[in-house]
Length: 101
Image (tube, one colour):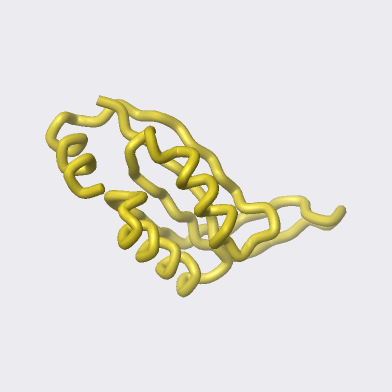
C-alpha cells in the first residue's frame, strides 16, 4: 500500500495554510502538515538565511504529476522545492487517504 509524500516550502505561514487548504479542497491531498523551519542556502551567488514553512503533502501516487503542476502554479517561489517519495503505509491509513481524495 503506497502513498506519495511531497515536501515543499513557502515563505510565510499564510501562504502555507492557503496552499494546504487548496490542496485539500481540490482533493489533491488527504492531509497536509506545516512546520516552521530555518533554511540556509545559496541563491543568486549569496548565502541566504531565512525562516520558511515546510509543507508535507500526503496523497495518492497517481496524483504526482497533477500535484507538481499545482505546486508550480501556486508557489510564491520562482523555483519551488518539490521533493517526493513513495512510502508504504499502514492499511488503515492507506484506506482513509484513498477514501478522502
